Amino acid sequence: MSKNFALLAGLTVILAGCAPEPGTDRAATEAAPGETPAAARDQEPQDQQEQPVAAAAGNAEQGKRIFLYCQACHSLNAGGMNKVGPNLHGVFGRQAAQVEGFTYSAALTESGIVWTDATLDEWVQRPTELVPGTTMVFAGIQDAQQRADLVAYLRQATGAE
Image (cartoon, rainbow, N blue to C red):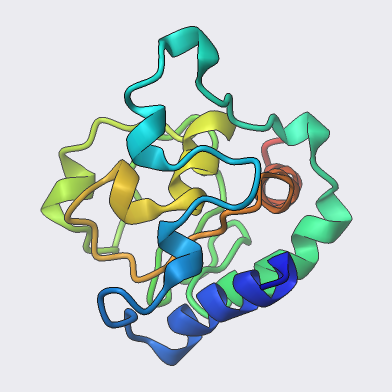
């Protein structure tokens, strides 16, 4: 399965508004060639774990294209409305679950996460793995470069730069 097809398949889930049936989304649960499955990564020594791709390595223009799928649920502008998901303006450096007027899951509210390039990279890769119990219905983006591109775009578009 091509990386683009896997991305589109995963993002189609969020546009449809429902999670895939267990066992049907292989791209979200299996590692891509050259990547280490999450279960195996957890057993590796810390210095050998794959590090998140920094936003500096991302291409914001490519990330803007990826965000087209996210905009169904998220706005980016200062003072923008919350949709199915919260407005993301000012997300960098903010503690998770802090956008006024949006109701979050208890799991995300109690997570203690502060949004950085690294935490957003982990979140976008697989939200339910980073915060079990989250209500965000999104299969995730397995391709590290696509995540880096998205984070670079978010940094640019949410007032972080």
